[in-house]
Image (cartoon, rainbow, N blue to C red):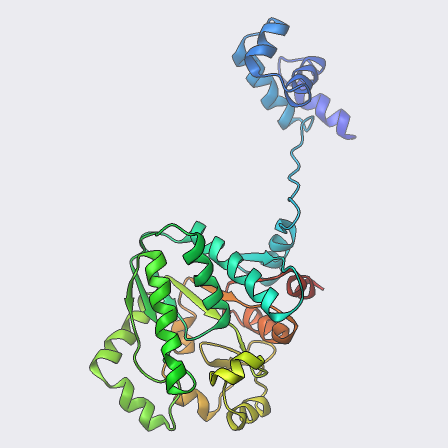
Length: 328
């Protein structure tokens, strides 16, 4: 049965004739007449015009096509969510392929996504120092109205030199300011020298109480790390050192979320490094309903793919090149 035959049978199954349905649809959708004007011209009631327009849609005479404006990639975003089982995906278009351009585009895209999706009951967990998250919060500070959320909790201690670890608090503080959340800081290093040192610090009453709140988070905002840090990250002292990196690489590690490392298929990489991290553990992380990862660029591709395949994140904000390669 052809489309036209199908349309005719659907319309003629009612008390309306096909030519009249088509004429009303053309006047409304092509000539731009309003329903009262159509009713007057054809000597019909307005309710009948409305009914005819509905029948035109049901019969397939009128078909809606959404064309994304330049710079928006709705089809690509939908394809990513379907292929990888994501809750959502946001694709940004950098003005160039260099790291700073990608960073700026990711920050703007993540800021817009958060502005439209944060609720007033949100309990947000935020990871430590991250270039993409700093770009995000800076974009929100520049454009977003203050929106009240319930609370913001750090889920990882500071990483790198002590003088650089203050960036973790700066990130959380700035994000709390633009969202109206009440910040709760995790005042500890992200990695210590031994499991016993880690256990002793986590035994602190304040840190223990804060860690117990990780189980109640509704949203996690995190960057996606890689064992091949950018020059800026390496110079800041926030990168994992070469000895640790070598051990993680030997175990198959390609990237991390909140310093929980995984291989290229998203499987956890277990070394003694994992026992020395002061931050949210994998099992608790995976219970957070919305886990947003903000990352892009060629250097991070393998880590990004591992993060979504392993379900470390279920919402991805990335650049167009990375998104297209993920679909390839």
